[in-house]
Image (cartoon, rainbow, N blue to C red; front, side, top):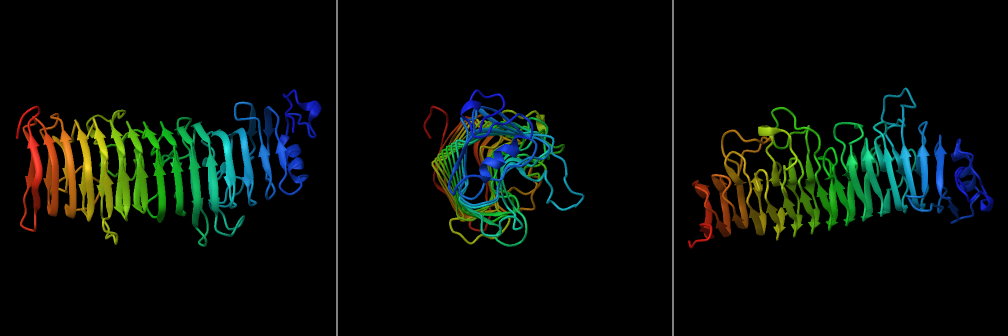
Length: 468
């Protein structure tokens, strides 16, 4: 295929004229033998309609810097057949409008510029953007009207969504059957400044792996989320998450949306997280959260969750909310019974220079926190880390009224910006160990109770530069 502005026309089987180029591209796709490839030249292909590769087909460009597909008039790139490969081009979509008077979500704008419906798809080295008129740049969607089997075995590698008015990467499901999306892999993908060009809605995230779908067998490696309107890496609340693993991922400067008035931690109108993890079996290994608006790592109702060798730094750094901002580096909440013990394991994790609480654990049972390091948090209301839920008013949008129970917490903390570096409140059968180094007026404050309390025999408290 040769674009109208390409010098490759003399050698091409199909030559586009720059208008309705999807007609020529689709003709080439339809003419392929099984497993064939359509090679796009360098240049720009203007598509005022949709492209639908056949099963087993490959659409191959010259790289996203050289080959561009520009979609208008509700044009999409739809992968609705199995075993399609897309490789090496740029996509852009704009000006989408509702194509139906139907009031359901089955409307054109509730799609992605690239929408994957069918299993065994491969998307390599594709960069994309879109304005705020469509739901996503890259959408993985189970729609039983298009593809009824389980949607599974999809891989994105070296893909990038940037400077969008909408979600970068989104998973979703319509209907009531086969709504679990399985075995999806992301390698070296990035979502940057999603929601910076307007916003499809107020919840635009970089990566959203579970909107109305459940998710199982997710693998995300070496991926970046930066500068997005809301969360960097995100799951919705009600979805089931099973066997989801993130390794070496970075989430930086997300939560660009202004804080709501009278903001409370966990406010449903503001995520602002590096990693937003409401429940499920999710593991994060060697992941970093840097300078996100409200949370570095937000965890609620963990069900066998793991955070290993993760680092947070400067959560809340970019907030413009003034005193209403109450950022939390690691926020662990539990409002529902969980069956797994431990409910969460945090091992060798660090909080560095938080603009709020370095660690907040509330309503949580069967937690195992080992080798946790907290350095110089600014604190909230004079406290650097809140371990438990104190009675009275909390800056938390939650009905949780419990502390920590049946847990083990090993913490090394330093800093003297807040009056109290570590506050231990409403704990039952919790064993503490580690070292607290601080010249704060009250390095550690403990609220005792008569229900089993805390074991502090393994916890040392030292002044900065001095002996115990």
